Image (cartoon, rainbow over all chains, first blue to last red; front, side, top):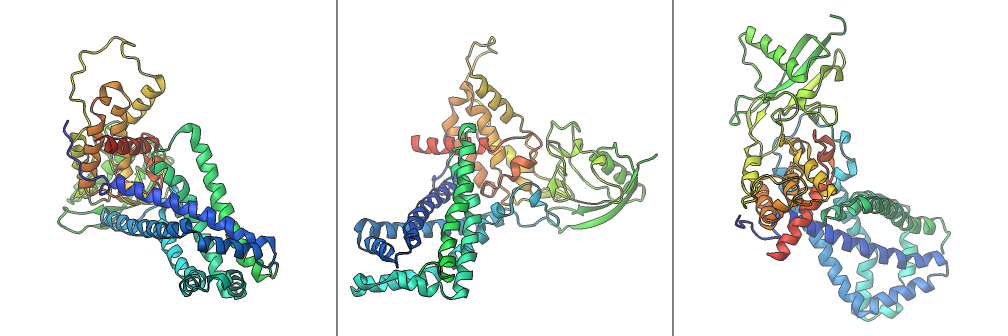
Length: 225
Length: 251
């Protein structure tokens, strides 16, 4: 049998692997982001939170990882678009009747829509916090930059709180499929570990978005000042 | 004749892949609940022939769930509402008197419609031709236990080999992906020592042909596993992924 295959990354499985790996990388970012922001729950007027924000802004490794993160996000989104277009082409005539709920979860079939919502949310989110921080970095005023106050201000607006809650719900469902899916894509499917992956995935997809959701809610209700 | 059913069928009629098709409504009366779904179609076709109309073309052969020819998308699900059966094994008792049943062909760019409910599944044959075989000499049939194979591996290979290549996985997948089929064919050989010899080239060639045929990409919704009449599991897709990644690292 001679080998007649093409390039790995152009193959369907290669593209799948890139989706899974970048997805897991973005998940690892979520953990860091969630832990650091949880400093606001200390309710110390943002002292620890700003301390953490300053550390992140000044640490060279974090600065490099920020760039890697952007590339990871772009790769994840662009690959998703390429795959979605290909998948649409694979069924030019749709079914008149299709009972998808009989065999799969709606959020598993809606990763493209959930991901697009998350991308829209990210634009809003970055315009709230990231752009100002970047501006302060370039102007050399990062030492005086108070992200905490900015956060309090943004989350006193009920519309912003609603947008963030919607974003977090989209994130929860995206993770609910994405987390176990990444392991399946990497080939990690074994009866001994499937239960662990599934349970960890569900726990992660509920707990992390809940912590994120608690931040705007707590600030809006005045629990955190 | 108690318990006989009257049904309304909406069946996809299409003269050829060059022409557009449409759903046509046919009432059928006096259907026995013990008939198979295909026998109900036989009754309908008899009526159509008597009236001088074209009978509905549909694929069938063994009518006992082992050949993989029957292929109807019934009320939005391949092989109908029951799990673990092919269309020929589906009985009319799975429906209720007065039901409306929509029947469509498998829909995928890689499975063009030949006529009505029949589709061309030779894309699967071309995938098999790229590596779904063993070309090394493995000698005569061995005595039992001459080649030691762990029982779990033998069982997994046997389960993968149960795939009848009907294409229900492609039909139900929202992406028209053929990965359940291809992974079953790769697995049944990769798990056994005779198949290991060519495992690297096999997985690369078969995946390349699968992509070439225009099947979509798997997004792990798991629909294929649920709808597969032979219960082929997603474990096979994970195994194919592992085999493919390792094969690409090695060569």
